[in-house]
Length: 219
Image (tube, rainbow, N blue to C red; front, side, top):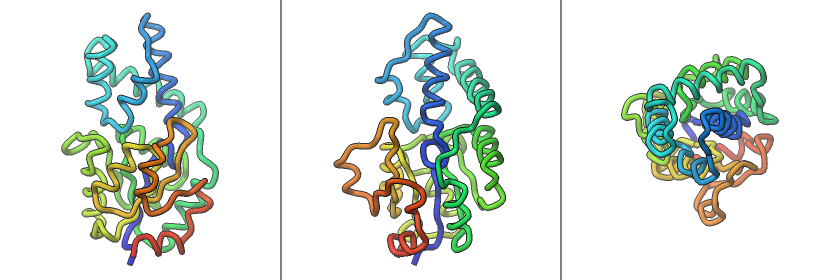
């Protein structure tokens, strides 16, 4: 029986994976540096210490990881203030799930960014537990740490916890946690077909995330 549902944020509830990529690219361009698609893939799912370290070490941006993180987060927050791109059906899906199970969010975004997004979405009061991968062990996805921590805080067994994710590293994290994973592949860097064969369900959009489906895959 399903005991809890954990949502990813960027790319799952908000169409912001591309926002992060665009802001990184713009920041590096202003510094005379280049951000490639290979760099985008490399940092996917990383925690803040991990991706900022990558930007500083591999791209010479910052200067230094701490400055790289602050400059990037500031740019993303400014973008969120102007326009937070919410995926169709996101608010409704969260509210639908909240009527039946405790909800958590496990995201690779920094805590301040997660809180801002959930407030703008208008669903913060429905989320019992929030975890950024930069907290605690600071291991980003595909490490399962954030998902396991959220489930533990909600008193849910991993085998009866349903993860809703979009990215390759996020799907791998949910699978590594031993959870039932529902994939909603994004238009931005979708996961491989091989990986999608390993998840519990593949949906086209959040409208397809039904109570019956979540109850079934979490059994």
